[in-house]
Length: 529
Image 1 (cartoon, rainbow, N blue to C red):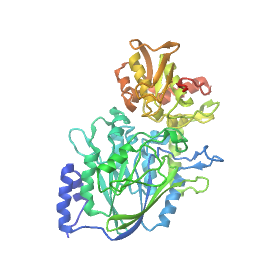
Image 2 (spheres, rainbow, N blue to C red):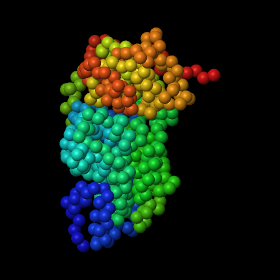
Image 3 (cartoon, one colour):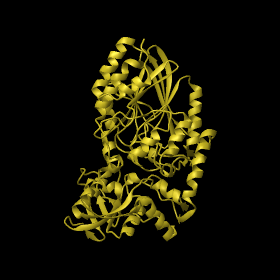
Image 4 (cartoon, one colour):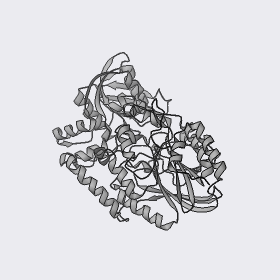
C-alpha cells in the first residue's frame, strides 16, 4: 500500500477544483476505501466567538446569571471530552473582534484555541479585520488547520489557506472542509482588507472537496461562514424578531450531496436541535455565538452513514463551571499585555447604552452623534452591525469603547445627494444588515411595505430631504466602501478622513465627562390603523 504523506495532501490541495476528485479517485483505486465499520463520536463546536473572553450577564434571564467566558467554556469542553470516547472540537470562524483581539491583532484568540485543543477552524469574515497579511501570519502560529476552500491569491490563483483536512481519532476518519459564502465575503469584509485575494464560487469549490474526500473518510463536515450577518445585540438569543434565516445555508446543503454535517456561522442562528435537510439529509447545526453555548452533536455511524444523531446546545453557566486553569492563565497573560494600553476611566455613563439590531438604539444614536458633531456634518450614519458590545453604566475606560467599536474604521466625511441619502435609510429599513443608526435626521418607516419603499417621511433637521440637494454626511470607512450593502454611500464625494471611530468616541468621553443615552425618536415606525 503506498504511503500517503503530508506532501501528497499538500500537492492535491493545490490542484484546480476539477482535478482534485480525479486525482484522489486514482489514488484510492490503488489503496482501497478507508474507514467504514461502526463508530460513536461527538462533534463539539463553536462559532462567532468574537473575542468573548469574559462572561456576560444574561439580564434577560431571572437573576441575571452569567454565561460564557473562555475559561468556563474550556471546562465544559473538557467535561464533554471526558464523557465520550471520541470527540472532535471544531469552530466555524469569527473568533476575532473585541479589545483583546484588536490590541493583539488576533494573537490572543489563536493562543486560546491552541490551549483549548481545537482540531480545526473555518475562516470567518472578521478574521480579515486587520488585513489578510496579518491573518496569514496568525495561521502559521497554530498547530491546528485553518480552512477555507474558496479564497485564493489574486492572479496567482494559489490558495490562501488549506481547503480541507483529514482528522483521525480512535479509528474514526473525518474530512473537514472550510467555506466562505459569497455574500459574507462581498458585503461584510472591507475590500481594502482583502486586496490581493479573491473569493471563488463556494459551491463549486466545496463540491470538488467533497468528491475528493468521500472515498477516504467516514464523515464529511463543512465549517461554513455564510448567509446574513448575525444580529448585534446582547440579548439576541432571547429576541425571535432578530433571528436570521438560513436560506443560503439550506441552499448550499441542497446543492452538494455527500455532506454529513454542516456547522454554520455568521448568522448566529442558534439551533437547539439539528436541522435535517429534506433532500440531502445533511445535519445543520449552529450556536448563538459569543461562547455562551457549546454545541454537541452525538453521532452513531455505520459503514460511512449517520444512522443516529442527537444534538444539543449546552449553556456555559459561568457561575457554576470553574475556570479552566490553563486557559485562565493564558487569558490573564494577555490581559496584562493590553491593560497598559487601556488605562483608567476616561468618562462615565449615567445608564447602560444598549444595542438593538433592527431598531434605533441608544448606543447607535450616541455613536452617530459623535461622528456628526466631530465632522460638523448635517447627518451621521453608522451600521448596527458595527456595534459589538453595550457600554455599561458607570465608569468607562478605553477597553469598553474598543469592545463596542472594535473595527479599524475611520471617520469619513462625504458630500452626498439627498437621493443617495434616502437610499441609505431605505437600505437600513430593509433590515438586511440591521437598521442604520442615525444622527441629524428623522425617518418614519413602514416595514410592511416592499423593500426599497419603506421610508414614508425623511427629514434633515426640520426640512424634508430633497433628492438633488447636497448634504454633508459623516460615516465610517466600512460603510463608505459600500459595506453591509450601503452601496449608495459609494456615490458620495469624499471630503475628509479623520481618526479611528473608537478614538473619536474616546476623545468625546474625555471632553464630556458623563454621557446620557440620547432621547429616542429618530427612527419611527409608522402607526398602523
